[in-house]
Amino acid sequence: MSEFLVEDRLDDIELSFYDSVASIGQPNWQRVFSDDNPFTQFEYLLALEQSLSVCSEAGWRPQHLVVTSAKEVIAILPCYEKSHSWGEYVFDWSWAEAYERNGLEYYPKLVAAIPFTPVSGQRIGIAAGISKVVRELIINKICHYLNQTINEKQFSSWHCLFLPQRDFNHLSHCSIARIGTQFHWQNKHYLNFDDFLNQLVSRKRKSIKKERKAVAEFNYKFIDGHKATPEQWQGFIHCYQQTYLKRSGHTGYLNAEFFTQIASTMGRQVRLLLVTNIHGNLIASALYFVSSTHLYGRYWGCLQEVDGLHFETCYYQGIEYAIQHGLATFDAGAQGEHKVARGFEPIATYSNHEVVHPEFRKAIYDYCQQEQLHIKQYMQQLSEKLPYKL
Image (cartoon, rainbow, N blue to C red; front, top):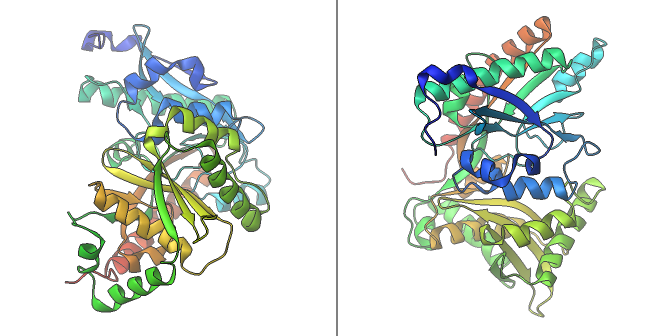
């Protein structure tokens, strides 16, 4: 990377919005999002946009904020103009309802997030080699620009969701801080699944063994995404869509075109778990992503309702995979305190929010301050219920 950011050239930083990741370009994107988190990769967001899973009609209008210096891209914040709050997983429905009760418009709003993906990771991608001082300056400029934008374009607010604690702390100086919690499984150098079970108290160990035994008649097979056949991908898509139909009356946020595209462009970071019966017929499937350190359980679906099959497919198979491949963390998705009994530990998630309306800003700030106290207490209470031996 060229040495274009020196202290006497900080005034040449420019910020602007782009309406697609394609218009930013893959080389620029990879310059600032350089880790292997699958959800901030160019290919992932491109598939969302090109499949039209994300678009204005879906209520997610791309408005990616790009920061340049000396005509080179040095930072990117994936952003969307939102006309609803679906698919965000940091819930602000009550805020929107309060606006409506007072005759005010909450939408549109500006959201910096990965659509439909409650996974923490970089939200402000900044090029490598940039000093801490300049990094902080860039974040300050982004915050100022977002505040200016929501005022000029008459958005109610901006929101940055599931960002790392370091950037959360920095943005908290110029916005409202909010925390949440999820449940992640941590690999403590286990040799195998039995080694993990042996670290649990007897009652929980027996309960998990009983759950697994109840669905042991089925065959579970992980397949690397780039090695899966089109038929196997279609089997997963069918399971995913059927489960959404039963639960929500629609076929899911993500369409078949999205899954087909990531199979082609991101297959090496995808794992398909296929569950078949003794006759070889598919009865369930799950989609996982991997990085060098994490396993991410994202989507699942079943064609046959079987007690305990969800736990096996979405939790225990993931734990086994993480142990076998030496992955440090298994993130099985948002919410679900029932995961605690299965060894998943509560961790904090972070988001920042800025609201234009002064009275609502104060009310939301006070709400988030109280919420933080409850979240921290809740996490402490659940930590005390973890099934591990003392």
